[in-house]
Length: 500
Image 1 (tube, rainbow, N blue to C red):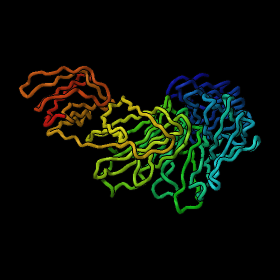
Image 2: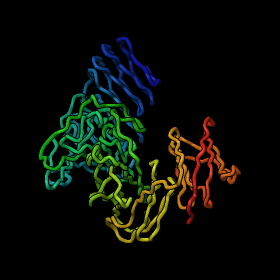
Image 3: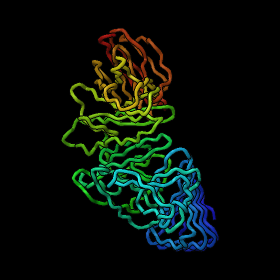
Image 4: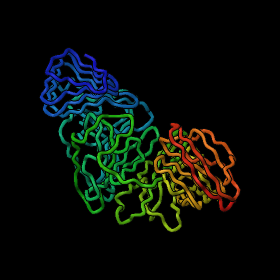
């Protein structure tokens, strides 16, 4: 029997010859329902098979969980599964044979040899601060993360599926600085926000994932909800990730529990709890096709939010990349939740392994600030649209924390109308009229009027981003904007008091 819908269920106990859960379909076996399958169960790469507590699934044949280049099939094992462990086949597609994968086993008993990994598997030792080779016949431990390279694809995990809570020991040493590579031991995504990690825990309330093909570490912070990951708080199945034990703690552990599981997904899944909203800026460094991101979030309530709302930068030091971050009190941050210094400037740093051409772009997600990127070496100061990339040359490999600054300028026009409904911001800077259009909004058309009501300029479609509508003489102006849905019109009054 084949299931194709987004919300399917087997509501009576039954026997089937075969079950197929297609891409983008979800099949649920409710509580108190017992299902038998003679030939086997196939869950396609974007499919979801879910057992509710108290359900039973008896499979006489094979269970296949498929994988694609984008997503793995999901199995949420909250009920009882009866199947021969040798009949379980869980795929992991390896798309980039020249890149390092961070993996974890969702089954017991699997070895590098049985996975047919042909370029070695390594685990991280915190006690030595070094990678250690895993023997070809050594079983991969549940909850432990590994790295590997292989030209064989897919890797297939065969064994008993992990269905219970996994307790993973963690440690801190002078050699390893508290870094521990652990892994999602389940057949569905693990939502970090549901694991109960907070500012009082023995580990930092952040995790770091090696992202390919960019070959950089991306990060997520629980307290602030800020992330340089597309998936936010969600860690996909078969994915390894770093956590960090705090200073002063030698040994601790973390419980990875199936109650924190959600279905694998292409896109960001909202986290479980309420998160504070911050004025934030996203910085993206580019080197060819490789990208790395950092986030600066402005927080003036320093008493309410402490350092646990920020996440340090973890460096990968890969060739062919640029790693970007912000600097505060000589520390490097991937996520920097901070109050603005008196200078209104925040230092940016970057790390490169070779000389060459690189780029930086800035996405302004604030409502109250205009953001300038300052290149101190070339004495240039720019306001970048969200699609603009500032290109620059680097002569020497290494770390540079002196070259770039982010400058936060408050909107300084005499009167600024700010649309709270649509988050459109219209303001004057340096004699130029700028309009910032946030995600989810769009301008179909507009008109700039002088103070007497005479039209000066017609505006065409404006998509998401910061748009410079040109220089205006000193005076007062009205800006009429019609939204793309045609249902709302906003009028902004701005004053140009000086020109450059």
